[in-house]
Each structure stands twice: as structure tokens, then as C-alpha cells.
Length: 263
Image 1: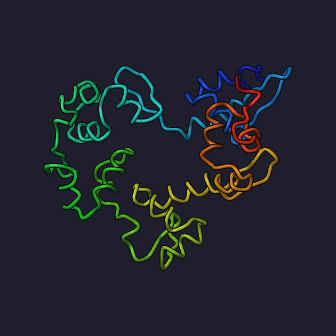
Image 2: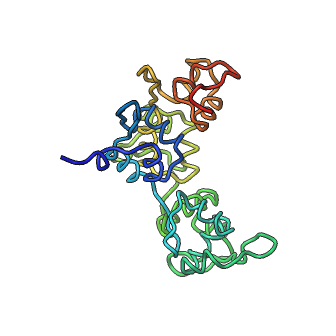
Image 3: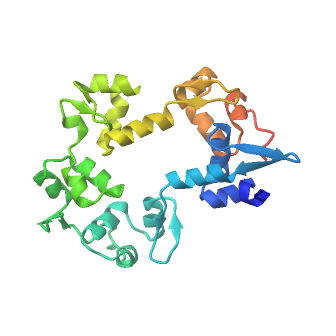
């Protein structure tokens, strides 16, 4: 039989283990993403669920072995912009050189030239995007999210296709029919496509974010729908959760009423 330390963790241990803020860990537990149990009135979080969270989260490691929750966080630590870092890596810089070489005093990246997967050099990302007939914003977002150069340049933007094909190869004659089939609006799909999401990633977003459960076990098709049902602005609920409110308190407390569990 496994020991308690191998099966469950305290909130602090779970926060350190997943590298997420305690309020986020608590929120995920309230929404059923992490199972919990109580021992002598103290709450514990199941390690198996925390392991699943760690598998889904993508962490970034610098040349010193330090871990960051996002590429943006790593770049911010070294005083870089994500665009500057991405261009440096695309131009063959080592990770250490890309992170430790300071930007110009004016805050702009000293490198403007970029190279495609064939070795062709362009003045900037916009020129390369034009050459491959792809939107500059889509290309930049794909590179920011870690796509390799060839995939970022050669994968067509889904919104430019007349037909839509899902991750399993099923074809839909229009975006409207595809949206109806996966349960999202055109606007949400368009925003995801603009960020460079593939059909598989869009459908994964649907599975992750379309349902939400409140403290009573009631399910809603979205976080905003749940907040609307309780008559509380979704931004207020999110802010309360960040400050450590339980889901029940975040949804039911009146305006300006403070939580008893938050000092």
C-alpha cells in the first residue's frame, strides 16, 4: 500500500508540484479537475490528478535548468520580448545566447532578418509571411507557440479554406456547419484560427472549456453561463477565485461582501 505522501498532497505541496498558484489549484479542485479528500478537517489533493495536470501543462526550461510556466515568463525574466527571442532561435542562436544577449537600448530587437526551412533569408517575419501567402499574425503566433518553421509556414490557415476538415478527417461544407458540429460559435473558432490553432487543438479547446460545474454539481456550457446563472459578472468571479475565495463564495456572495475564508 502506498503511503499518504505518495497519494495525496497539501495545498502548498500541490502548488509547488504543479508550479501553479494555490488559488488556481483550489479553483481546479472546486470545478472537479482535481480530486480532494479531508483528513482531520485538512484538505488534501490527489497526486494522480496533479500528475495529469503536469502532463497537460508545457513548461519551459532555460540554459541554467530553471523552469518557467510559459515562454513569455522566461523571456520576461531575461528582459526580452517573445518576438525577439523567437527571431533569435529562428536564426540559429543557442538558447543561452538568445536569452542572455541584451536588446538595444531602444527596446527593439537588433535582429530583423529571419530564415525559412530552406535557408532563404528575409528582412523580417512580415516579408517571409508574404512570400508564403500566410497572415503575419498567424505566423507570429504559431512560432510563439513553438511550431517549427516549416510547419508554421506550410500549414494553411483553416479560415482561408472553403471547406472545413476536423481532426478525424471529416469534411464540412462550411465554417457554420463545423461550428455547429463541435458546439462553438463562429467568432470563437475564428479567434482560435487567428492564433494558429489546428482543428485538433480547436476541438481540444471545446472538450476542455465548454462545460463548467458549480459547487452544487450543476453543469453549464461555459464559465460565463455559470456566472450569468448566479447574476455575478464573470470578471468578478475570476477575481474572487484568484484571491482565494471558494467557488461557492465567488458565486454567491453579494457585492462588497467579504469571504470568511480569506483574511
